[in-house]
Image (cartoon, rainbow, N blue to C red; front, side, top):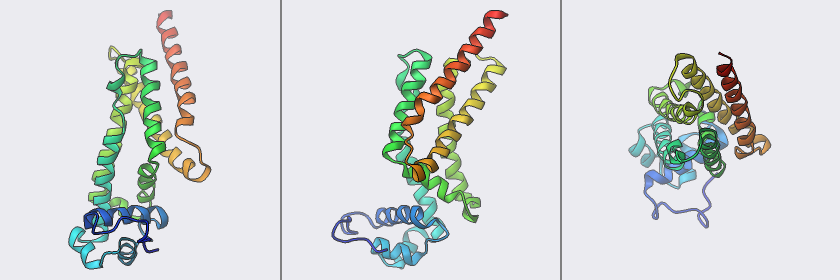
Length: 213
């Protein structure tokens, strides 16, 4: 569907590159990457195919650039656990995860885009894999940073392994919520309390086990 010129920003008001990426984001969410054609991008952006090829070289080039921009936007929006270092470990986790979920509730298209491009042959393209890995590594590192003061403040192989496992679980939770949010309208923020309760229970079990030694 072509852009509504009466309400959408015009190419004259934004750079052609930004307009094309905005169009690509909308089309990937609507049709998926495989369903998006250069002709669709041209109609959605109001720019000729030659402009798309000039800026990105190919449809895959558009996707790679869109992922790069998405990472930059997510990095700017997503809170850092260190911002809450003045709180006790569990309170720090809850404050960070609450802020992170609030950010994702404001911009659910970030994770929806990752889900959309994870299906189909384009996921194996080197440029796509590199950017997706950057995004996922960043998210995983944030989880590790948030969980370490609770379970492995003094290190320890087993404790650090638990942190890694919980970081994977936390990342999987937000990945899954991107689908649930799209289909059922369940917010990311609604899952903060259940996840923090799970972590609190594990922390209490860990503390009880240490007292018995």
